[in-house]
Amino acid sequence: MQYKFFNIPVFNGDDFADELNIFLRTHKVVDTEKHLLQTDMGTYWCISVSYIQSDSQQQKPVKVDYMKVLEDKEFAIFSKLRVLRKTIADSEGLMAFQIFADADLATMAKLEELSAESLKNAKGVNADKLKKWGNRILTEWLQQNN
Image (tube, rainbow, N blue to C red; front, side, top):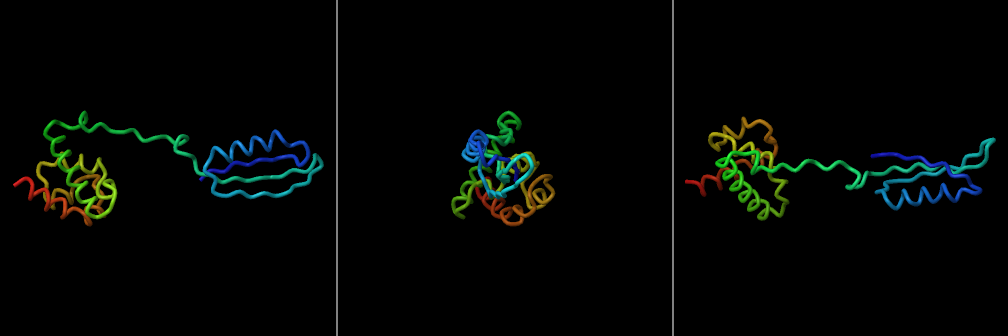
C-alpha cells in the first residue's frame, strides 16, 4: 500500500483541491483521512490518502515464451501438462494457475521422468500444490502416456 499527503488551504485552495481530485480519480483508493490544521501561515486541510497502485502503474511481470526456452521434446511434455492442468482446473472449478504455474510445468517437463519421487525433488515446484495436485497430475499423465 502507498500513501500520499495533500495540504489544501481552506481559502483559495482550488488548484490544490483539483490535484487531489485528479489523484483520487486515477488511483485505487483504500482510505482517506483528513484533519483541519491552523498555523501562522493559514488554515489547511491535511489529507492522507492510502492507495494501491493500479495495474498500469505496477511493473508487469515478463511473460516467458516456453516454446523458446524449452527444447522441442520438453515443450511437447509442457504442452501436454498444460492440457492436464486445464482439465483438472475445470473439474475443480479453479483457474489453471491455481493448480500449477507455467514455471512449475516447465520444471516438470525438464525432468528425466515424471514420478512421485522426481516431482518431490523438483526445484521450484510448490510443495503445497504438489501435495494437493501431484498425484492427480501423475495419475492422468500415466493414463495418457502408457
